[in-house]
Length: 212
Length: 212
DNA sequence: AGACTAAACGGAGAAATTTCCGGATGCAAC
DNA sequence: GTTGCATCCGGAAATTTCTCCGTTTAGTCT
Image (cartoon, rainbow over all chains, first blue to last red; front, side, top):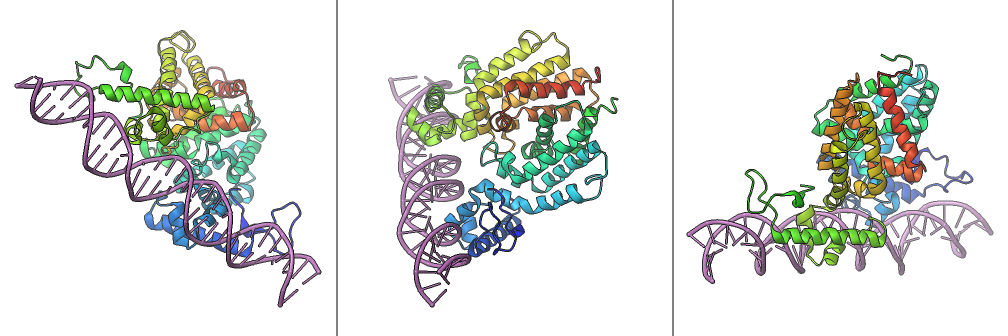
C-alpha cells in the first residue's frame, strides 16, 4: 500500500492478471501534483515538520480526501516520498559495482550495504522517522525495508556466520534505524563516519574468519 | 520532564536547593487520579489505543489542560505509566542477585540485562512504542533509557571488548527496542525465547574470550 | 488569621488528522 | 456515442491533539 510505483507499470492497455488494474489517469495526475507539492513545501521550509495533510492538499489544489486516498496517512506520504532515492540505492546494491554490488565477498558487501543505508539516513532521516509515526511496525512493512531485508539476509546466509541470519538481519538494520540515527547524529553529536565505524567494528567482530 | 517520581521526594517542608520545589498536594492528587484512570482504561479496553488525552481527562474528572500540564503529551503519559515497573527492574539490575545484579562476569550481566529489557517489552511494548510517538528521539531522553544506557555501557567497558562501548551500547539497545520487538513478536511470530536467543548469540560472538 | 505568590486548574478553541459519502469522471464494452 | 461501472474527487464534519489564559487554590510568611 505504501508504494504503488506507478511509473513502473506496463502499458495501461495490457492489464496483468492478478495485479491492481493500473492507475487511472486522473489519479496519476493528482499523485504527481501531490508529490511535487510536498517536495516543494519541504524544500521551502527546509524541514519535514511543515508537511500537514491539510496544507499539502491546499498547496496541491486538491481536496483532503484525495490526499488520504493516495497515501493513507502521513506515514504513507513519507514512504512515497522516500521511494525515488530508494530505487537508485536498490539498483546500486543489486546491479552496481562492488563492494556494494555483486563481486565482493558477502560480508564486505553487507558492510557496504549498511553504510549505504546510513547514507540514506543522512539524507532522509526525518522522512524515514515520519514513516514510523503510522504504527510501530510501519517501517517493516514498507517495500524498501522488505527489499533491504531480503538482500542483507541473503548476504548473511552467504557469509555463513554461526548466527541465525533470520534474526541478525533485523538486528543489524535496527542499528541503522531512523530514530537511533537521529539521536546519534544530532544529540550525541556523532559524525556519519563515526557511526559507520561503529557498524564496521561490530560486523568485523561477527566474522568468524578473523577473530582478533 | 517525563518522570518526576513524586513519591520519592523527601518531606515537603525540607526543600532541597537546586531541585524543583516539590510537587503541590493538589498536583500529586490529580497525578494519581490520572495514572489510575489511565491504567483502568487500558485494563478495561485491553489495549493502549483507547488512551486519548481527552478521554482520560473526562475519566479522571479533570480538565484537559491538567493532563497536558502533568505529562506534556501522549508520549509523556506513556513514559509516566512505564515508570513503576522500570523501577523494579532497575532495583534488580543494580542491587539484585546475579546474573542480573553484581557478582557475575560483566558480559553475563549484560546478557541478563538485555533479556530483562526484553521481558519489559513483553509486558509493555505498546506503551514503550507510544513513547516514541512524541518525537523520533523521545525514547532516548526518557530517564529509564538513560539509566539503562549508563548501566549497560559500564558493563561493556568492564567486559573490555575491542568495540567502542559508546557506540555498542545503543546498538544493543536498538535490538531490544519496542518497534522491532513488536514486529518480531507479532508479525514474524517469534517467541520471546527466540528473540532472547538471538541476542545471546550476538553477544557471545562479540566476546573475544570465546571465539568459536 | 490574612495576605501574597507561585503553581495548578479548567475548558474554550485553534490546528491537525482522519472518515465519509454524494457527485463527477475516466475507461472499457458495445 | 453512449452506456455502465469502478474509481476518484471534494470538502464537510467528527475526532483528537495541543495551546492559551482567566480563575482558583495550596503553601508560606507575617
